[in-house]
Image 1 (cartoon, helix red, strand yellow):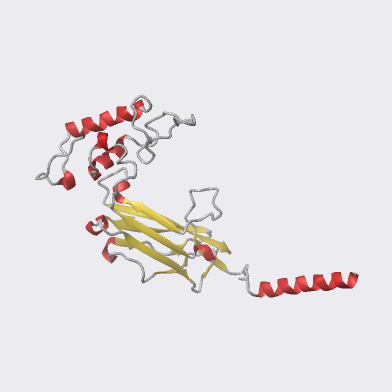
Image 2 (image 1 turned 120 degrees about the vertical axis):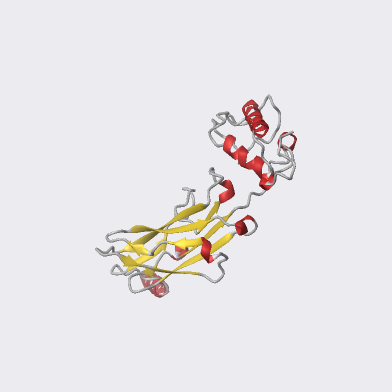
Length: 256
C-alpha cells in the first residue's frame, strides 16, 4: 500500500514540474511593466481594466475642446534610481486622426513603481459620427519586459456622440422628441445628488435618480422632485434661445 502511495505522490510532483515548464517564470532581477487603469468595480476579479471610454458629449463642460486621459503604468520587480523609457505601439487596427491625438513621453521616473502615460484628444467634427479608437500594446525593450498578461494591452475609445437614452420614450410627453441639446441640459440639471429621494419600491436611501437612472414611471405624485427639475429644464429653454445643432434657421427648441 505504501508503494502505491509513493508512486502516486511521485506522479503528482512530476506532473507539477511539467506544468511549471509552461508557466511564465518571474525573474526578480527584471522589471515587468503593464497598464494599470483602476477598475471602478472593486468586486471584479480583475483589479485593472483593459478598456477606457470618454465622451465629449457627456462632459459636464459642454464646451470642452480637449481631454487628457491619464493611463497609469505600473512596474513589477525592481525600481531603478534613474529615469527609464518603456516601449509601446499603437496597433494598426486603431482608428484615429494623428493630428488630434498627442502622447506624453513614455518614461518611468526614477525610483517609481508607477508612472503615467498622458494621452490628449482634440475634439473633432469626425467624432460626432465615428469614435476615435486606440489599441495600445506594451513591448519589451532593454529596460522592461511586458508583464501581467491581462494588462499588456489597453483599448481607449473617445467620441462626441450623444445617443438617445433608453428612458426617453417613457418621458417623451414631458421632454418632447429626442434632441441632444435637451438631453445635455438635463444632464446639467438632474445630476446624481440633485434629487435626494429614496428608491420608491425598496426604500433604499437616495440619491438614486438622475439623468442616467430615471424613474420608470411618470406619475407626478410618486416622483415630485423629478418633475420639479423638469420645470427647471422647461424654463431654461424659455429663457434661452437654443436651436438644433446651433442652426437658427431651424425651429427653436422648447419643451412640450
